View (cartoon, rainbow, N blue to C red):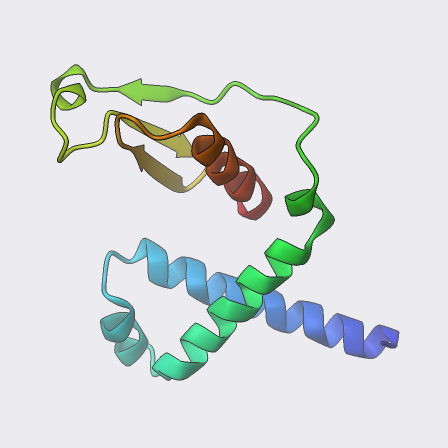
Length: 119
């Protein structure tokens, strides 16, 4: 791919990422958000699929992280005994992850690695 095509593809990818992030941060359904912003629902899911594919194919996603970081955890003692509410909430950048009691360490690590790449 030549430099112009690469630049164009990267620009589109950044635009799509921004749209996906805005939608997810809106607390609206995808359908409602797309309707308000005159974006076709099929376009939204196409862009989301392309972003996920690119992240999954990136070297950072495929190789284990060599650097471990401590992330702030918020433990709510009232929710630990309830199976409906999360036992732990992790805030990483603009993302929040709720983790239910009994979630495997491997699953938590995979989610954190994914967030580290996209946040």
